[in-house]
Amino acid sequence: MTDRRDLSEGFDPAAAGSTKLGAAEQKTAEQQAFADKLAKRPPPDPLERAQIEKARKRTKARAPRIAMHVEDREIAGSVVYPAHSDEEGHMYRLADAFGTRSRQFVYSMLKGLGNATADHSLNLDFSPASPDQLAFNAALAVIDGVRPKDEIEAMLAGHMAVANILLLELVARTRAAVAGHRYEGNGIKRLDVLGNLTTKFMRTYTMQVEVLARKRRKGEQNIRVEHVHVHAGGQAIVGNVSHRGRRGLTKNDQQPYEGGHEKPTAGPVSDSTSVRSADQEWQTLPVTSNEKGTLSIARRRTR
Image (cartoon, rainbow, N blue to C red; front, side, top):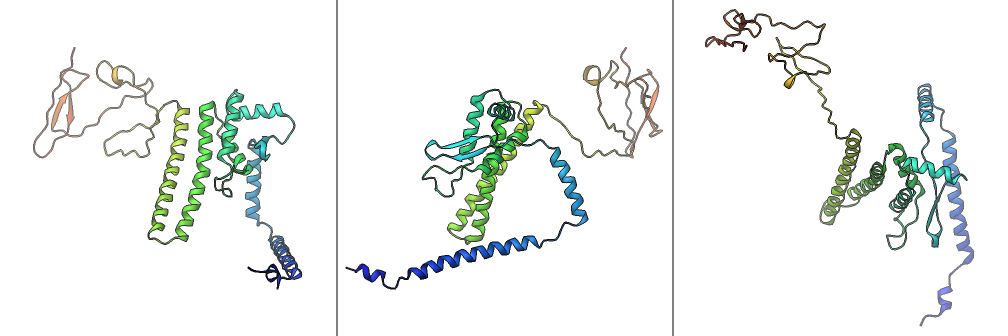
């Protein structure tokens, strides 16, 4: 059996105290060195100063986002409250941010966001996570910035905010896996799992944005034409085109034209062959021909 006096031999309380004091002094010196480094930074140049002024004006023109204090009361759990004393006014701001008149919906969303943004990095999910006020208010800012019109849009905005938090965490873990593991065995498996999860959350976030945009369009489809090629002898119309009559045609199977615009006429293409005109019963119109022979088309107008 070991004597306790043997364990205490060689222990110098004065040396231990001086070690702690030395560590504290070193930390203070490092903080002072960093403060001196920040103080020696040069002022912004004229170009940067102009950009700062523009950014200041645009930022002040934006509506301030809603934010709350989050406090861990241990037994009582996390408590959220506004920074000012007007509880009723803050409740109206929350209802407006979530696009609802239901207090129950607001309370449910706040509780869900608090749990989803809590910090689990220290407890490893063995005990209640500590509240993260920064992440909580960031998620609130996302929802307030989306300006939801109803509860469905508010939930979508909340999902987008939480998906972004998880996505950034997965990206960080994936980079750590790339840097800290060899490309063999468990290192490949870990990188594969994290990479797949990161890709899935990226797609999920994109789908959420598309769903929100589609809901606000109320199912309308927009077709955008980026390139129009008009070859020699062809015609194109750029703009909104509306057709009247059955299937966009008039009674004589001709496209209508607005009053005040001259009806386009086709110029001669070839003098070899002719067809009947749709306007006059036997008036001929020129058509093209090729080397193998002529192509003749006759069409009599139906009376």
